[in-house]
Length: 269
Image 1 (cartoon, rainbow, N blue to C red):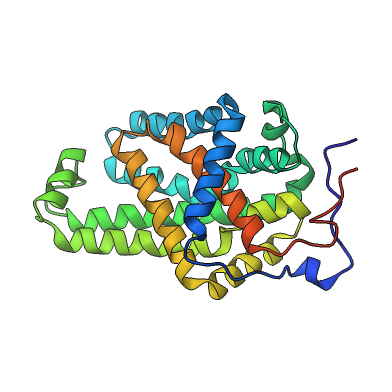
Image 2: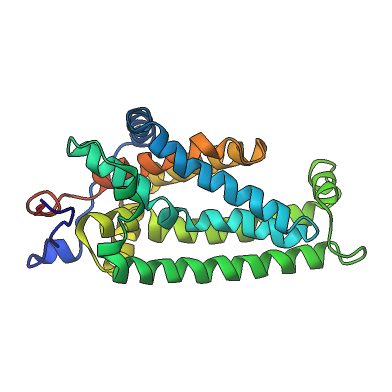
């Protein structure tokens, strides 16, 4: 038996998956299911969390003297979260099938889906680069009298309300990028991984899920933002656990939101 899943094919509902309505309790249900997967998979999931934290520490070191760029890239690399968490989705998918997935299988889950996932990853990478540039512009315009700020300058400006306009613009611009990625990516990568759906159809399915469930999706976005902020508040150490939790929960969000195709998303061969 190979690890590949045959594309659902044929049925128009498989090309443009139908989405379901969920209740406002759904985000907490997804987090609980994600926690169960995190406990079952153990250090395999923690490995991915360590990668997120290590990426944050590396960028902090490399861009220590360019905090404006560091801030943009640090928050921006989380825009790539749906792609980076693919291994976590694969772990949850296999656990759902009753398997005990090896780490190697999750690391290379993207290989049979390279074309479609590659297109989506390229879109997210472009968004990341645009956000990093926008972040630099906001910093430069807000602190133009003294050059680009240090970390201490930014903290003082935020908590002493020295730069209220900076905080408003920065979080508004960042929120726009984050909501855009959330809207097109909330179920996209799990859907492509599960059914080998093309990137455009997967993004449309994500948009449809958000349109049909605006309040649950806003609550889910708030949960993600709160947990990521908590991870940042611990100087990235908290991401070691929180990012795997969110990754596994996202798989369960996909399974809850998207109606299964014929054969439950494809038959394993």
